[in-house]
Image 1 (cartoon, one colour):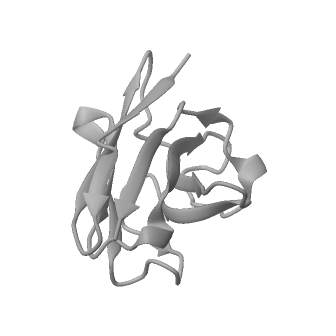
Image 2 (spheres, helix red, strand yellow):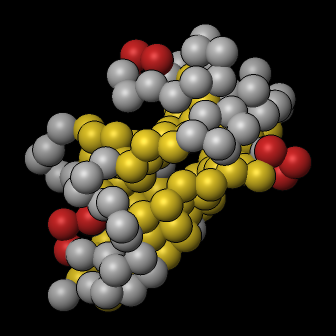
Amino acid sequence: QVQLVESGGGLAQAGGSLTLSCAASGGTISRYAMGWIRRAPGKDREFVAVINWSGSSTYITDRVKGRFTISRDNAKETVYLHMNSLKPEDTATYYCAAATQTNGGWRTRFDSYEIWGQGTQVTVST
């Protein structure tokens, strides 16, 4: 069973950068679409970025477009979220998730993602 572990979160100042990593173990994610989803305190989950199995197609939510990018290294079984120009409103717990039944294509439906990590906290101060 594939397990996902996020890392790279922490405290950053507004305008700063962080890179989150999502490492898979117990199996391969190389054929799965992967997503980064965040939940801010008191708010609903939202998709931040998703990527298809090969990395050739991505989706970035408008809220972070131009600031965040998603990438993957299938050889390392790892997906990344590169976050630049951070804002206090980016403060949230960030989760990565794998969509195993989409033939590698990305989706922005939460129920398309069957495997979730435990999350990593990102806090952006002013």
